[in-house]
Image (cartoon, rainbow, N blue to C red; front, side, top):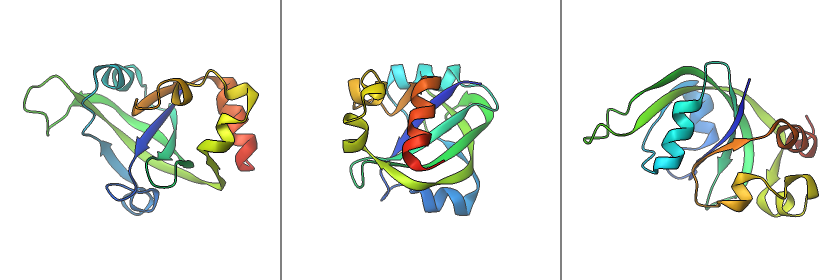
Length: 135
């Protein structure tokens, strides 16, 4: 299993909306590196769900339930989506400021490439964030 982080602005798509809908296509990604990360995702991989701009915190975990396929909203045919399913809300959100202060997260893609909307997460980073959240 691989680990990832996906970002959404809560006013566009929030954790609560994800939980209510259960499974949804993760669409609208228009950055080539982020799209390459979507293509690398496999069924069963887990992702942290991060609220960007407002909140700036990891709030939950989703699972990849369908591997990449063409993004129906992309007229160019270059970009893809994956389907994700809400798994669990973190007991306590992990704030960006807290991640920046955690030594084991110093090389995390979220912190090095802050604008990237789909990022890989190492097993060590996954474990560290789970500890910070109370899981």
